[in-house]
Length: 167
Image 1 (cartoon, rainbow, N blue to C red):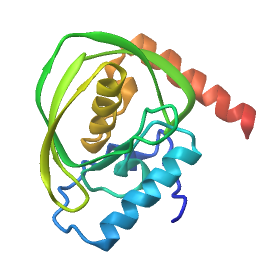
Image 2: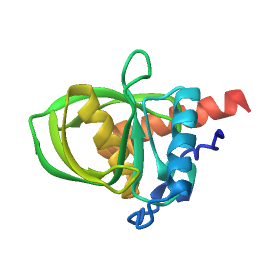
Image 3: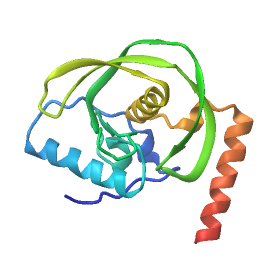
Image 4: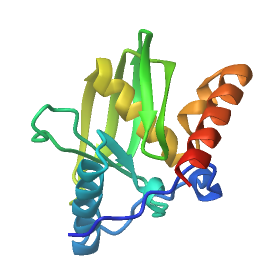
């Protein structure tokens, strides 16, 4: 396994729309393993392939306390969503930056696993937020896109200030 470099905003590659996965092979399973290793090491609870400069519709997540409930979604699409929740989100592509984002409380997702098997799964609460956040990456959206222009501007200024302080 290998740690993959995570793209950081404002890298334009984060705006790339991911393509469907069509080949389910050992290389895909290795990418999934590398993405989990990268996500856990970061540390994070979700990672989209776009964030590691692989523009395929693939994401991994694990919000369990012991990092023992891995979720792999290949070619995910939301079938249903309902409810509303506001949750403080962060992102590995925005180190140290957090903001309240409004998302659906419940989502039903159709996807495939790393072997190409199709399935549907319901997600609720914080895990639903995580899945929606990572799915946004697959269409070139980042979580600050959900903020008002003023909040987005303030957050991006804070991110730039953090970068200058650590440079």
